Image (cartoon, rainbow, N blue to C red; front, side):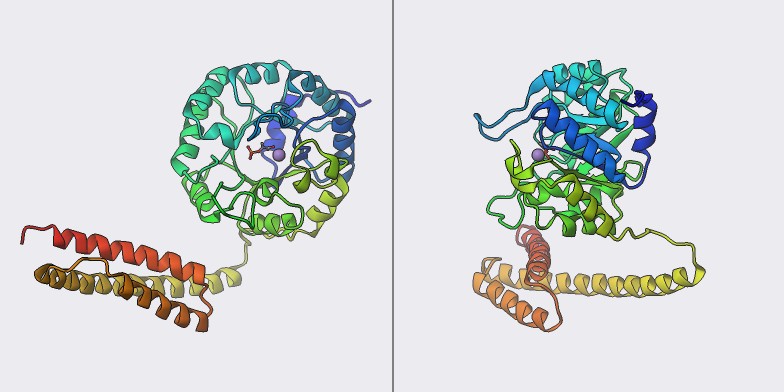
Length: 363
Ligand code: PEP
Ligand code: MN
């Protein structure tokens, strides 16, 4: 057995490592399963932090809800055997106390907790005075304010090492992913919090094994600071999230296959080319805004005309005609139907707002 590492220091150091790779089972099931997984992860040399769910927030009662506090000593054993700092999800004040009592190195707040300010506040209160890094998963629903609120509550409790985990958002009827990634929301959160590392959790976005690689690569291409990926010695027989877990060896292959691009390189020529292309983009964006402004002016005139003639703002047939036309044109120039729909929805809403103002103005 190895000497127990001075884990506080290791955890803080590891928290600053890029990329930060976190892996381990969805749930700690038995001591053997956990320690075996940890050892096989450690052998790969590619994993920085061992994760394991001890308390599992399950959608339906009767599913395996975690081994509870008795699993915490198993994590200590796994750490002693491998030297890897350990991370656990906490959702209540009591869970924070127990995790800290058993020297868990890193805590994370799960998606089902981030949605609830009462729970986040309870966790924050229990964290006061503790010196432990905390990662905050995005809330289940696509709401950046809730995510931000959770970050603020934990920061106010005095936690210095904070980070974000993007695990996708619940969306009704979505079948491709267990949780829709909605990358734009995570990118916006990253933009608003330049000081916080952001980790991607492709396992909970995907819900299946087969597209983890693709999602992980996408996150790295978007300059994420790390990955959290679930792994298990016997994924098919895992007690929770069996479909999305992979063995430590498959994880190692996956991580090796990732192309780790740099955000920046120090070459003048490269920057010059990029600068030129960015100028072109700025120029086109300026033109697009000008044109949109003109379009809104025409919408205003139409609004005035409708008002004078007592016609409704929304005329469904006309709107369908605009969309159909845009789909046909978009297809020719490689713009997806999804983009066209979103773009036109936004433009249409703005037009309607303009027309609404005119309809309801006194003159
Ligand atoms: C987990 O990490 O096992 C988990 C429950 O994740 P999430 O909070 O993202 O659903
Ligand atoms: Mn899980």
